[in-house]
Length: 276
Image (cartoon, rainbow, N blue to C red; front, side, top):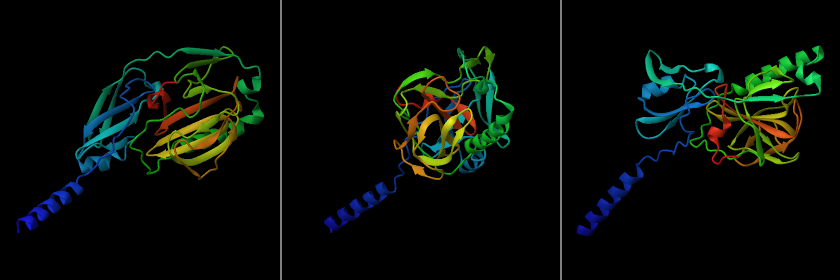
């Protein structure tokens, strides 16, 4: 009888332990409240709040029963201000934005058609810009609990995110990616699993791949020499997607890598496991 009771108790304990919920690690970038950075915080949310917050540009990962880690992008153009993350009529979070000094970069491009494109290329550029915006606004349901990434190619950092660019002494758009210089033909791999949402050969970007990683997270790979994937294809983490090249508007072979969260480019170095 005692043995039977002991067996029942052991079965009960094993059943209870099997009901324990194992939550993901939620390995997100650290909180970086500056232009081009991200808001990364742990907050308490009810189930109704979670449902409401899913309508906002916020990446969610459940930490435990009542707590969630949120990730939200900060635009480069925000300046120094504060961001209020709304939740219907409530204020979920207020974050003060710190200033950050980004350096200037001045380069010369001899092919003037790439600096000031000819009339014949304007319609092409307009169409490519619309395609890029559409690809970067994709928000599928696939979610990663770990956003730690390895650099997509081996090389040297040649230009960081946020640089104020001047081309032939004329001010241009801010640099919204990370440039990694490497020889033509160097392999490029996907830093996270995802699905190819767009491939193309663009006027400015050259040969480019757009990957959708779910939850509003998109990565782009530009100036490639060869593309090894097709639109709609699913690629796993560390799987080859192409090679470094010098296509499009470039001064030398490199990969222009972007991380876009809900349509907003953010600093890729915040997501890297190791520094370049």
